[in-house]
Length: 248
Ligand code: FPP
Image (tube, rainbow, N blue to C red; front, top):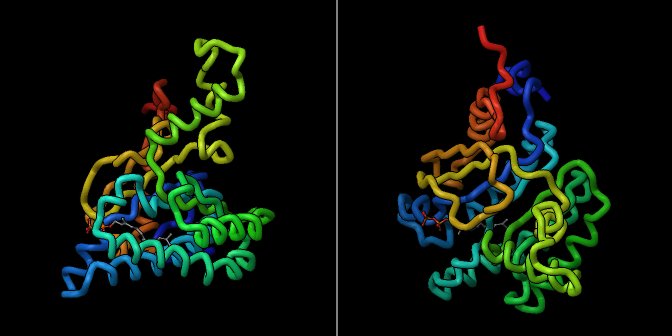
């Protein structure tokens, strides 16, 4: 699809298969406007849809969003409730359109801590969208990269009770990780001015290009997304090897 933000020739050269987002800056966005933090989160949640649509326009098949980390329970109860309500609202409101737009929804994280209603909504939304193939949108909720590694090792061990731990290779563990169904992210975008991974997809980010921007999440528009994609196009991914670029 034509878009004035990015020369098409550039994008066609290198489209990431998987873009992961750390959506930071909702609170500051609200504060700048003299509004309660919950307004920032609501605005941030509204932002998600336009970015998923933009990923579809750009033929990006996997989008992952860090919505709630294992550490976010430390926030004031009221804020945690706001985030949970927004998640419920998102699931209730968007699922119909997800089917129209070919969105498969996946939710990763320790869901056992969520209330029964939310768990049921998540399971329903995943089931109803399971057949869609245009884009897989993964929402990481009560997720932590360290938690994921521990749960993968625990499940590997349960499945291989007769084998010693020395048999646990990278390839053996991979199918037990939460995102086993997706390629590793090619590009991580973190908004809100911090440059850290914050216990997100620790295993999967091993070779990911990282784009950090001061833009606050509710302001991260499709145009900003294109800027990140244009930056990604110029990166030289070596995966521990040597440059693929032809030297002159
Ligand atoms: C970080 O901003 C943002 C979060 C902890 C939550 C992100 C959640 C949403 C955007 C809404 C729900 C998502 C979906 C997919 C429905 P912050 O509060 O840390 O901001 P600050 O650093 O400015 O305080």
